[in-house]
Length: 283
Picture (tube, rainbow, N blue to C red):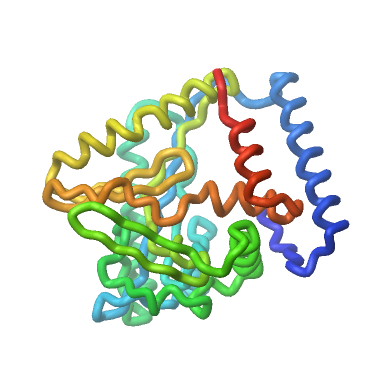
């Protein structure tokens, strides 16, 4: 976990070997569950905050690597684009003043990263989609220079079987555009809260989270503010003044992450759909 040992030139034999190892890990995890070795009897929460880095004119600033060097803090880590950053909170037991403690930690880390950004003539912006972002910002030169991000870009392109991504946004406003890399996902930022549950609770909690996505979006659309919603592995944005740009799925993490595993195993898109249908959580 966390090892950045990436080899994009893997042969078909290497890919099959990797799939065998992944299946072995899944079997090991199943044994942990059946043996009752996964922690229970306590409930914790955690959170991660993603953010944009912008220059003095509010345009994306590709300085995440430089800021991380200044911060030297394990709470902070990279995102796909060099103008994105995220920090992760320490887990808290879900009791007492835990939400107050969470707020205090968020404010502390925001103050720290804002100070580092100011030293580079930049600022931090918390937004679902940065209003000033342009297609010209979503180039491969702005991918964070870590091999895993380049591998993700290549694997997603292989999965799709073509070099272009098409984005369609419909509603009162309409946008249709094509792009040549996974960098469309860099348009999305979010605040995500994590809840620790027991293995027995996971399936019903997961299914409830999926079931309430639609109603939550509908209720949020009534209010006159911007709400970023993250549920499961998908990102959606509800826009201003009662105007809902349908549920804008810019690029779901499911396609990137689950698809990546199957691509390196040599599976095609049809195989991916079959796999995902079989993998739906029940309970």
